[in-house]
Length: 184
Length: 168
Image (cartoon, rainbow over all chains, first blue to last red; front, side):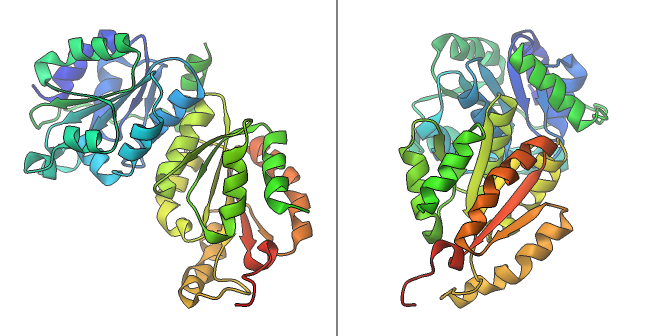
């Protein structure tokens, strides 16, 4: 499966939760598949989805699901120790690990070679780290929500992108409706 | 006057309850004070752009955030300031140790000091420079201004403000 197929499958789970979605094609895919006010789309700033989601989870009690990528985690690796030492039970970091920089032409990342993100998350102090294959994402995400524990979920899948339109919504609109969903 | 306590008191009085820090020798006292207090949650960052991500999330979650860092971080965070904090119009007080200014003992620090105000000006970030201890009296108004306009605001605090480096 490629990322967009996973997103389509888990859309009914995501719909009811606060979602912080990674820059580029992941946000375009989620926006096209199931746009919700409770989705925060990153339009820039590669690497910070996990950090934004962590700040949000620490600030309020609702569950927060971060949809991140292997390339973005690799560009902000300092996030893993911060998560390992601070993440509250309402924080779920889902890393769609397709071993490539999808938004820039599918150049390979190091996770397609020798680098193991689940192992790095454990070494950084993350207590609940789960690695699954693409087809098992939905049940693993539901388990993470039910566990009430901070979870790093690494989803191994194929490289590839769906052709989706660029998000043209104004960033302040994205942010404002998201904050209303957070407060609602 | 205890400057460290004064800064933390002003943050708390303005409802700032989520502070991330990347350390600097000059900031050691204020970081310790913030870590000690129950009315402010302190989360250390490994890098300043990561810290700004944490602050963005905390603000959307209903908390007023702040970041405490060195001016070298301006070189690290320009993209984050432009495409996250400014683009989504978020407030972010940045209490910045202004290394490389008067009474600085480490020459390399001057190399970023000479760019600091120019970079902040290029980004249209309101910038205040604390050089004398009494300048801290402006902090309360700066914090109110930051959360009024939903912008990142820089407060540069140099070695003279912090009392210098002793005999160096």
